[in-house]
Length: 69
Image (cartoon, rainbow, N blue to C red; front, side, top):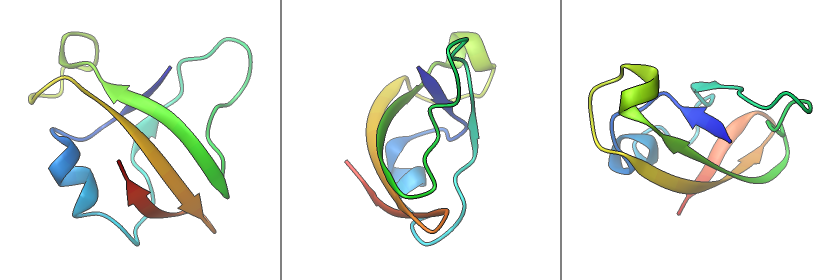
């Protein structure tokens, strides 16, 4: 699962219209889509980024965040 480098889902939502800060983790190929929808999470115990653990569905268009659910 893709890791989002944000401390909370609220912080991700503040970055709508910007590029996504993420880390790929899949050994089967990239999960990131420049146009499309995918799911990821923040796992503080893995990434070392302080904040809450959360999961989010992100919609991207032209490498910019369109929505975060």
